[in-house]
Image (tube, rainbow, N blue to C red; front, side, top):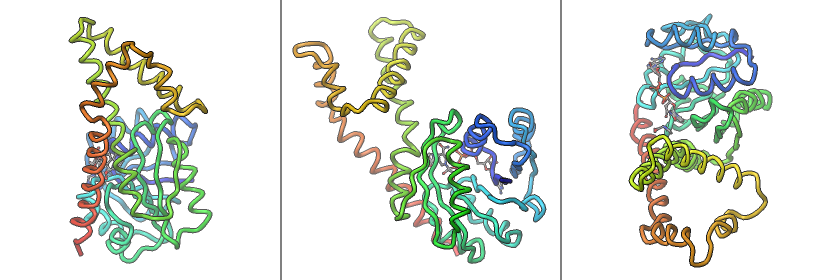
Length: 271
Ligand SMILES: NC(=O)C1=CN([C@@H]2O[C@H](COP(=O)(O)OP(=O)(O)OC[C@H]3O[C@@H](n4cnc5c(N)ncnc54)[C@H](O)[C@@H]3O)[C@@H](O)[C@H]2O)C=CC1
Ligand SMILES: O=C(O)[C@@H]1CCC=N1
């Protein structure tokens, strides 16, 4: 499989590192990015070919992954439109709907819209994906192979669900990083050094996540196993409930999903 990435920023790099870690032939990847300051790192660290603008020859690949900001997508799509023939186009842009991308690409039919996340770079990502009907079974398999290099893949039948995926797993790593930062800061406030508290917090998030992911036991039961009657955890959880942890997460996800829909509505309205 030959791949061209349009945009070589954070998400594209996370996916490429995932591919590299899985033994993908990196000389089969071309990255188009006008920010030439990124080219040396992309070439040396990842072994990919770079270019500052797309040409028909550079896009003679199986899969084109568009990884630019949603606000840049329309202009990028209009540049790509005359250069396409039968390649599969995979978009990672938040909010932008396949109908709008297809229109910007001149009525292009073979598009998969996805929402990956940055743990892709350690093959621990998860991607939600939605394919237009014109995408062939072979192209879907190609996209699945590419995305599996980044971690798990969840195929969706309804494109609307991608805004929820964006709110949960696309943005989710940032929520987790914020919680690690917060738990770590709490440890410092209780007298631990920054290094000690970060070590304890990181190992706790990692250990609890691995335990939950690898266990048949319901998560609520795992939580109860930590919570001794009359003990310490009970007090910590009581405080979290008093601060409405469920409401807080619900509201955060709703706001992120709302923004995904808003990006789709606003940017998709462009001709
Ligand atoms: N960062 C994340 O955690 C995730 C990001 N995404 C999506 O990935 C996309 C990219 O986001 P990031 O990688 O975070 O942004 P980024 O800013 O790190 O990367 C965007 C890249 O596009 C390049 N670019 C700008 N104009 C271009 C053009 N005309 N042609 C080619 N490249 C061009 C920029 O130079 C930059 O390197 C966004 O649409 C975002 O919604 C999706 C899932 C997670
Ligand atoms: O914040 C954003 O818009 C992108 C999409 C999901 C994660 N980062």
